[in-house]
Length: 145
Image (cartoon, rainbow, N blue to C red; front, side, top):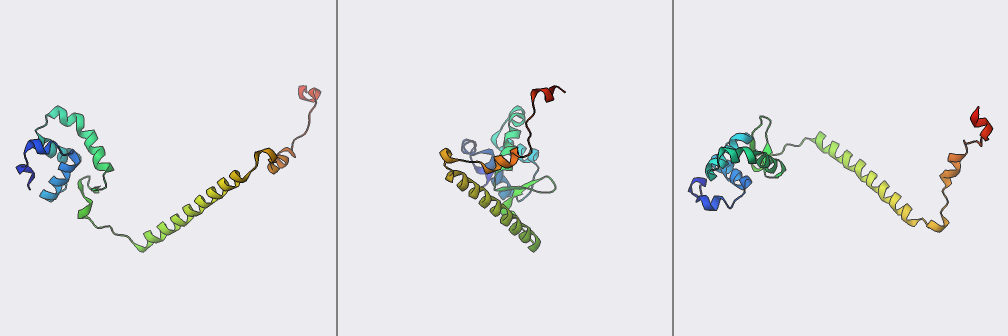
């Protein structure tokens, strides 16, 4: 069903994001944030002041939605209209990053497990002895000098 044929009271039940999605699907065009929201406002008969008050929220909803993509020219389109091109180099970089992050997570888990295994009553910090080895005892007289 075309957006222009949907009664205004039914359109008002939809979110701005849903109306924008329907608009982009129907018209098969890309639009910048301002123009896309103007189209939404036109369909809902919103005033200029409502446009100004709500455009920031509209922009946020587009940027946080997984259905929209911001193109290099600053216009919005639906992700479903675009294919993702992944090179082998990108895959190699991702695999390396995952391996590094996985090993970091394991180290953190091991540290947590080590901490959990410590008995607080019998705890002796072996590192404390090493930290104190370089310290010397100074008399009050030596401090004044």
